[in-house]
Image (cartoon, rainbow, N blue to C red; front, side):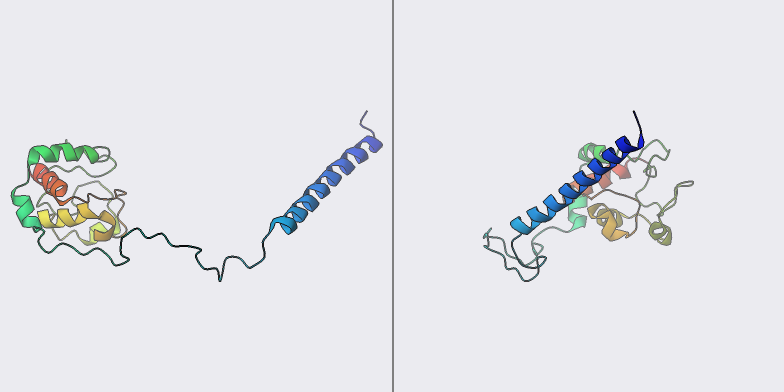
Length: 172
């Protein structure tokens, strides 16, 4: 059943099929390719006006500063915001994916014993987590501490950040 002639026929059929497949692909690309290079030199066909300008949005000058927002922060509302942090951080004194946050407000940075901090935060160990520092970090962890291990995008709303910091200040 598996003599030399049968194996030669099978090998010939496989090679022939491969050749037909390659030639078919070449013929299709020759028929359906519209000339030109690889994308260079092409202009956009049309523009959709969304009404937004290309200039970066400026911060409103009448927006209250963080100290004003923090002075009226609600720790109870901050507890609800902490639900976003709970996946990685604990408040029971043990480290999870991230370090525990007990008493983090006014605590030295990178000071949770046994937690492997990023080099950036270790370099900031002489500083404390003031409410202002926490606000900047929670706005964008990657911008505040480039190279941080924290993969959280940040909290864009200043009232949420202030409420969260007020809540964390009560967890000593």
